[in-house]
Image (cartoon, rainbow, N blue to C red; front, side, top):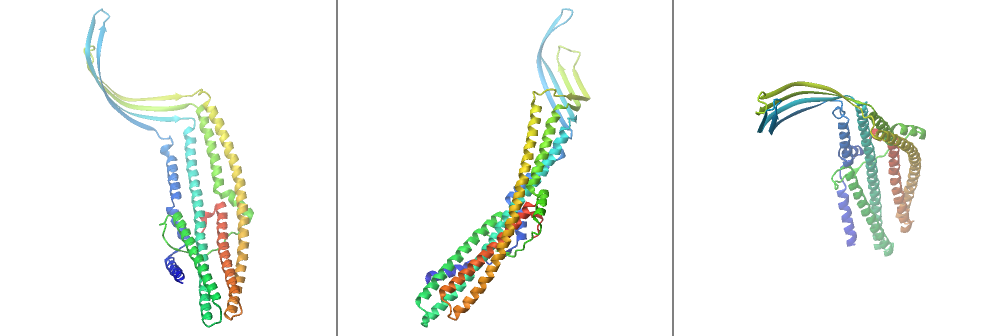
Length: 439
């Protein structure tokens, strides 16, 4: 009896601890989108891709560089003149100063900049799809964790109700034993059932607490934050299987990524082909040079200053690069063919996944309907068994069996209800509609 009182005290504390605020699915989604680690990392990668696709990384803008310097030299001179005279000096110093501002710009590079800039923008679009893929995967993980909590919460409530019924039966058996209307064996059996239901309830609460901590990790809240769950569930898959196929072909993230990889492979081919075209460049410079000559070797020049602009146009044509361009183009074409094969494989996989998800969902809805009918039948059977037991027309063993049947029916129904919802959300993910759902 002392151990039984301890269990009851623990259950009372557990009930108090779990009476917390309700975390709606909409709130869970919002918190996850704002805080989840995987989503944050993906968004940072997206920002880097946006920077790479900027005009500042395109090569379209000219480069401007300023330069400046100073020099000093000390030399020995041996000079022989045409008239046969000669002259030697040593330690002659020359000091020079220079500064310039130069501009360089590629006028034409065989469309390399254009293709590379377009490729950078496609990589930016690719990173956006990658973010979407991670968000969808994270949300699907969130939904699974959320509805797992909801299912375990209702299961714990069923255990609690079953425990209350067993406690009432124990009290009734004790009264009947006191008045000689039943044996002590009935009391012992009732007490064993109370202990069993208490343990089931405690285990259910522990599983629920673990599931809540798992959910907290996904939405990046404090691991030990407590909350209740909105257990309301509705279903919304009205499209036919053919409509789902079409939506998946147009919106499935994996298929969009596969197409984007093909587009990038096309740009790789074009970029290698630009190596066969000459490059025309333009350069302009405005410079200053000043030299002080402290020398007896040439006494007619003391200082020299040069100041002014200069410009040039140059052409570079890599006529033969040893075959590297040829090999690069060939490999880029092979890579594009590989991406096309992967796209076909992805199409087939997505079609299979849509079919499996749709049929699984339909089966889950049938199971849910059957479990609901089974629950209704077991409720009626338990109510009649309870009436007969109270009238003394049913043994405690038969009453316990009806109680267990009801508990199993409630647990099965709860599981079927949330399992069907998770399968439905999997369909929305496959057809690219997960981010458009209203919660």
